[in-house]
Length: 168
Image (cartoon, rainbow, N blue to C red; front, side, top):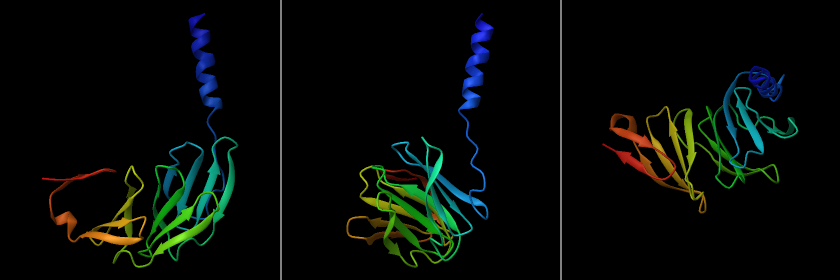
């Protein structure tokens, strides 16, 4: 009896898996699930960002040509209101998840490809890193850069998380 129960449990888990087909025209470079678990957001080297409703398993929006080059990094603010994208075009863009509109563009945010993005837990600061060996901090309220760690990877950075910077 226990074996039958276990098999039914496994079958149910397999049935819950969903396969999204024909998602992008080119490779997917970044995926993020919104903190409220409502949406899956994908970014591709085809320069687009797509949003999928995780309940209905349907695409709900497509930012075609969101950047001039491929999307390299995505994050979502902790309040699930904004998508932040970084690109090989060296820029960072912010999109409103409700209105599906771009609300800000940090043009030439770095000298090279944006490699990673994070937003602090209070949604106040955006942190970005790049292949230019730098880390930058932007104030999301004023939309201004507030700090720049040049040659950051030549220093001994131990960790960067959503709330603090730890160095050796």
